[in-house]
Amino acid sequence: MIFTGFKRKSNQIYFKKTLPGFLKNEHKSPFDEVKKVLVFFDDNIEKELVVRELATLLKISESDIKVVVFQRKLRNEKETDDIITPKDFSWYGKIDSEKLKNILTNNYDLLINYSKVDNVYLNLLLLQCKAAFRVGFAHMDKRLYDLLIRCEPDEIDLFHEELIKYLVILKIVQ
Image (tube, rainbow, N blue to C red; front, side, top):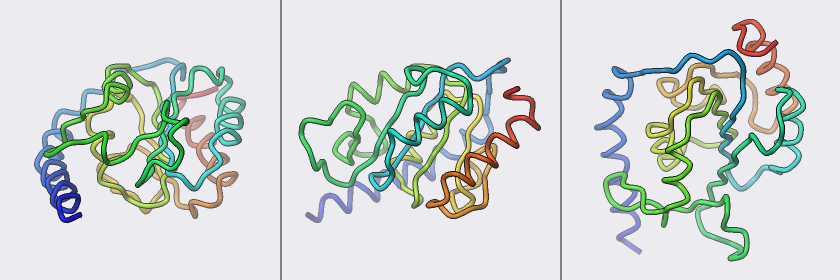
């Protein structure tokens, strides 16, 4: 429909309007170790395998990793616990979904975006999420992240290798 294009455009306008405030008021909470992680996926990645590997690398429980999967359209009505769609957002960046509001009220030590494309809806979540350290692929908007890793989005093993290397250098993990 034509209204979905208008809605997406209104969300892009809201994102551009609030981004300078986000960049100016970056209040990151210090943390000693990674305890809670928020992970963004698009629908092309096998999330269970990646979460299991990430929990092993960071030496945390899989239950401490919160997963959000973005899909353009909801494909399976049964799996709605961690899947978000553009329907969870309304005009001008307002979040309608209670599950997203609950996610955004929590504080996270680490946020990792495994998305293959730069997405206005995930960027809106990045603006509103309380995460101390944000990591993504190098093709993403560099203003939203603390660490960008240059590799192809399909190279998850290389991404994890580089992620752990830099988190150790930055003394975020041991």
